[in-house]
Image 1 (spheres, one colour):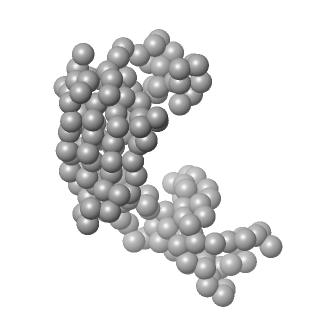
Image 2 (image 1 turned 90 degrees about the horizontal axis):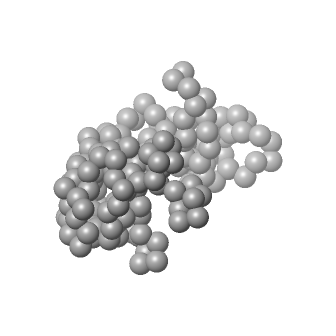
Length: 160
Protein backbone atom coordinates (compact mmCIF):
# COMPACT_ATOMS: atom_id res chain seq x y z
CA UNK A 1 0.00 0.00 0.00
CA UNK A 2 1.34 3.42 -0.99
CA UNK A 3 1.49 6.54 1.14
CA UNK A 4 -1.12 8.95 -0.15
CA UNK A 5 -3.50 11.57 1.21
CA UNK A 6 -5.86 10.11 3.77
CA UNK A 7 -3.65 7.17 4.76
CA UNK A 8 -1.74 6.63 7.98
CA UNK A 9 2.02 6.29 7.54
CA UNK A 10 4.34 5.07 10.27
CA UNK A 11 8.00 6.01 9.88
CA UNK A 12 11.34 5.75 11.62
CA UNK A 13 13.32 8.93 11.05
CA UNK A 14 16.47 10.82 11.90
CA UNK A 15 16.51 14.59 11.42
CA UNK A 16 19.86 16.36 11.01
CA UNK A 17 21.02 19.88 10.23
CA UNK A 18 23.47 21.03 7.53
CA UNK A 19 26.42 19.97 9.72
CA UNK A 20 25.06 16.46 10.25
CA UNK A 21 24.13 17.14 13.88
CA UNK A 22 21.11 15.09 14.96
CA UNK A 23 18.21 17.37 15.88
CA UNK A 24 15.59 14.69 16.49
CA UNK A 25 14.93 11.01 15.86
CA UNK A 26 12.30 8.41 16.47
CA UNK A 27 13.16 5.46 18.67
CA UNK A 28 12.76 1.84 17.59
CA UNK A 29 9.89 1.36 20.04
CA UNK A 30 8.17 4.66 19.17
CA UNK A 31 8.07 5.39 15.43
CA UNK A 32 6.11 8.42 14.20
CA UNK A 33 2.61 7.77 12.84
CA UNK A 34 0.80 10.56 11.02
CA UNK A 35 -2.17 11.12 8.71
CA UNK A 36 -0.75 11.92 5.29
CA UNK A 37 -2.14 15.07 3.69
CA UNK A 38 -3.46 16.51 6.95
CA UNK A 39 -0.50 18.83 7.60
CA UNK A 40 0.79 16.75 10.51
CA UNK A 41 4.42 16.89 9.28
CA UNK A 42 6.40 19.51 7.36
CA UNK A 43 5.25 19.82 3.72
CA UNK A 44 8.65 18.98 2.19
CA UNK A 45 8.88 15.65 4.03
CA UNK A 46 5.26 14.83 3.28
CA UNK A 47 5.92 15.48 -0.42
CA UNK A 48 9.03 13.22 -0.36
CA UNK A 49 7.05 10.38 1.24
CA UNK A 50 4.11 10.45 -1.19
CA UNK A 51 3.97 7.18 -3.12
CA UNK A 52 6.40 5.31 -0.85
CA UNK A 53 5.58 1.89 0.60
CA UNK A 54 6.45 -0.17 3.65
CA UNK A 55 10.18 -0.92 3.64
CA UNK A 56 11.14 2.05 1.43
CA UNK A 57 13.88 4.39 2.60
CA UNK A 58 13.98 8.08 1.79
CA UNK A 59 16.61 10.80 2.09
CA UNK A 60 14.78 14.13 2.03
CA UNK A 61 16.53 17.50 2.08
CA UNK A 62 13.90 20.06 3.01
CA UNK A 63 14.55 23.82 2.63
CA UNK A 64 13.04 26.28 5.12
CA UNK A 65 10.27 27.24 2.68
CA UNK A 66 8.94 23.66 2.81
CA UNK A 67 9.52 23.23 6.54
CA UNK A 68 9.12 25.92 9.22
CA UNK A 69 9.64 28.93 6.97
CA UNK A 70 12.30 31.64 7.07
CA UNK A 71 13.42 33.34 10.28
CA UNK A 72 11.78 36.69 10.91
CA UNK A 73 14.00 38.94 13.00
CA UNK A 74 11.00 41.12 13.89
CA UNK A 75 9.76 38.16 15.99
CA UNK A 76 12.79 38.56 18.27
CA UNK A 77 12.03 41.17 20.91
CA UNK A 78 13.30 42.59 24.18
CA UNK A 79 10.75 42.57 26.98
CA UNK A 80 11.11 44.20 30.37
CA UNK A 81 11.66 41.63 33.11
CA UNK A 82 8.84 43.33 35.00
CA UNK A 83 6.41 42.01 32.35
CA UNK A 84 6.76 38.57 33.95
CA UNK A 85 5.03 37.61 37.20
CA UNK A 86 7.00 38.58 40.29
CA UNK A 87 9.14 35.70 41.49
CA UNK A 88 8.77 33.76 38.22
CA UNK A 89 11.86 31.81 37.25
CA UNK A 90 12.55 33.02 33.70
CA UNK A 91 15.34 31.03 32.03
CA UNK A 92 16.58 30.54 28.45
CA UNK A 93 14.74 27.74 26.69
CA UNK A 94 11.42 28.17 28.47
CA UNK A 95 8.40 28.62 26.24
CA UNK A 96 5.13 30.38 26.90
CA UNK A 97 2.14 31.74 25.04
CA UNK A 98 2.19 35.47 24.35
CA UNK A 99 -0.46 37.74 22.89
CA UNK A 100 0.31 39.51 19.64
CA UNK A 101 -1.69 41.62 17.20
CA UNK A 102 -2.20 38.39 15.20
CA UNK A 103 -3.45 36.47 18.24
CA UNK A 104 -1.70 34.07 20.61
CA UNK A 105 1.72 32.73 19.68
CA UNK A 106 4.31 30.52 21.36
CA UNK A 107 7.58 32.28 22.12
CA UNK A 108 10.85 31.07 23.58
CA UNK A 109 13.10 32.88 26.02
CA UNK A 110 16.56 33.06 24.43
CA UNK A 111 18.38 35.36 26.83
CA UNK A 112 17.79 36.77 30.31
CA UNK A 113 19.54 39.98 31.28
CA UNK A 114 19.42 42.01 34.46
CA UNK A 115 16.39 44.05 33.34
CA UNK A 116 15.48 42.63 29.92
CA UNK A 117 14.37 39.25 28.56
CA UNK A 118 14.88 38.36 24.90
CA UNK A 119 12.03 36.33 23.43
CA UNK A 120 11.81 34.72 19.99
CA UNK A 121 8.52 33.97 18.24
CA UNK A 122 10.17 31.99 15.44
CA UNK A 123 9.91 28.21 15.42
CA UNK A 124 13.28 26.87 16.67
CA UNK A 125 13.89 25.30 13.23
CA UNK A 126 12.80 28.32 11.16
CA UNK A 127 15.35 29.33 8.53
CA UNK A 128 17.15 25.99 8.66
CA UNK A 129 17.59 23.27 6.05
CA UNK A 130 16.33 19.95 7.41
CA UNK A 131 17.72 16.58 6.36
CA UNK A 132 15.57 13.53 6.99
CA UNK A 133 16.63 9.89 6.75
CA UNK A 134 13.40 7.89 6.80
CA UNK A 135 12.33 4.26 6.69
CA UNK A 136 8.64 3.56 6.07
CA UNK A 137 7.53 1.03 8.70
CA UNK A 138 3.85 0.77 7.79
CA UNK A 139 1.06 2.25 5.68
CA UNK A 140 -2.60 1.66 6.52
CA UNK A 141 -6.08 3.02 6.05
CA UNK A 142 -7.16 5.37 8.86
CA UNK A 143 -10.06 4.79 11.18
CA UNK A 144 -13.14 6.96 10.64
CA UNK A 145 -12.33 8.78 13.87
CA UNK A 146 -8.76 9.53 12.70
CA UNK A 147 -10.08 10.93 9.43
CA UNK A 148 -12.66 13.04 11.25
CA UNK A 149 -10.08 14.38 13.72
CA UNK A 150 -7.33 14.89 11.12
CA UNK A 151 -4.65 12.99 13.05
CA UNK A 152 -3.64 9.51 14.18
CA UNK A 153 -4.88 7.97 17.42
CA UNK A 154 -2.96 5.46 19.53
CA UNK A 155 -3.69 1.74 19.55
CA UNK A 156 -6.10 2.28 22.47
CA UNK A 157 -7.95 5.01 20.57
CA UNK A 158 -6.28 7.78 22.56
CA UNK A 159 -4.85 10.83 20.82
CA UNK A 160 -1.26 10.17 19.77
